[in-house]
Length: 294
Image 1 (cartoon, helix red, strand yellow):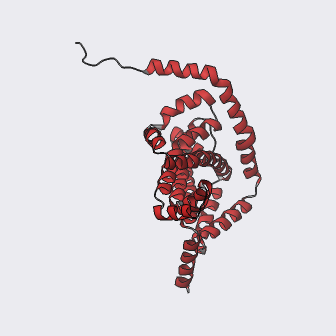
Image 2: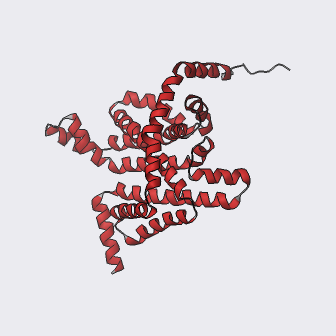
Image 3: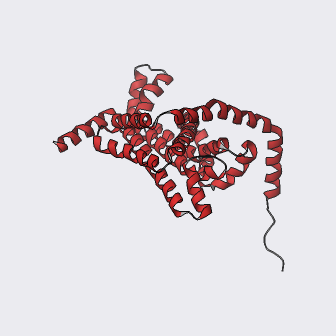
């Protein structure tokens, strides 16, 4: 029976284009892999692993206190991280934190300037919005294929896959926050003769801070969601135990790894959300909490 469908298969063309790109630029991406590993990922991971756990818990506690200004939530967050150590997953927690730190740093370095540029250029916004839609909706395993071909197995492809996955919300919310800054405030600042750079630093970014911090929060959460998938391509960390639990039908090991990931997500979420509120709002919440306790 004749088919009514026209043959529009693109698999061979895409494979040919990707293989040609890899053969031409493979050495360049290999150099990027070496730089990321030797200059950032491995030194950071070794540094975190050498730190005594009590020092890390103390640092997180101080950071949480500075963000939240409430003793109850701070104690809960620190005890959650302590529980991860009690599971015997402290080293893997540090490996995950190192991977997330590098991935989030790259995401911020790419996402914030891109969001700022989009807010100033409607033409760029029209071009990039479909690209960001594809990045958000494309299944992760699809873009893992070219990433693996370019960078091989290990931590570096996990970093780039995480950046691709986590970048869109930061770009969108940065652009949205700056675009929604009150036009009258912007006009008043221009009336005082500020330069475009001063307008960005002193007006746009401070007023768009809640939206930008929400984008950063979402980017970090999406980066953490990549932990298990990253473990499938050779990255170490908490996702490794979840993957091992799936492969070996080991419910206990997988559950411990999953709980550890949830705890880390809660810690990061609470601290980043608190910093998104701003200093005055945090102080007001702290004062309200103190009055309630009294």
